[in-house]
Length: 192
Image 1 (spheres, rainbow, N blue to C red):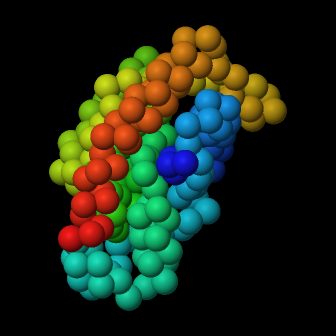
Image 2: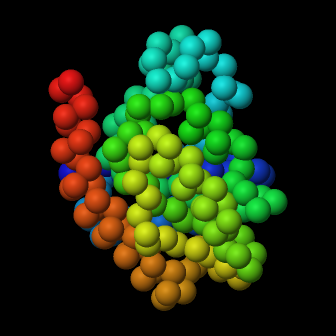
Image 3: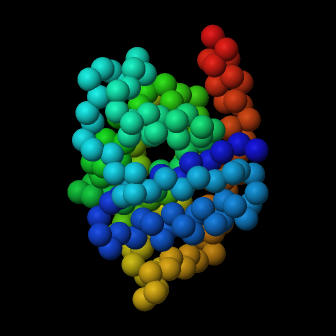
């Protein structure tokens, strides 16, 4: 079974990203196409990029980089859960992406974004530029949560509506379809 890594791209105290990611992870597990790994950047705690050599060389010296590399390398597809900060995505997410290079290659990328009226879509547009540079393939379907606070209960649980559930299911199906196509490229790269 392919592995889907869901990355929580915010570390801010009181963030909505973790409850939104937990909802998405549960939805993905229920769909059953992927083994799901929740990677919370607040728990991973990568420092600002501190490797002496370019990530494409994969000559990592720090244990935190080696651990992050192994985790992303294991993923067959990735979903980035991101808020929108000042029309962009958080620096902590950019830092986590920039730590690695080939580990991202030939993987489908999905996006769950949240924010105000724009629902995080401007952050996703910026992320798409970055992930395509890393030879990832962004799926067309995405989950965009407008005015996300309306879906948060006082207990901190994210309670989506039917259109958000449907969007998650559509994106998961597309991630699974693309993973099948990209698997051949990943396997060829590992043999080479």
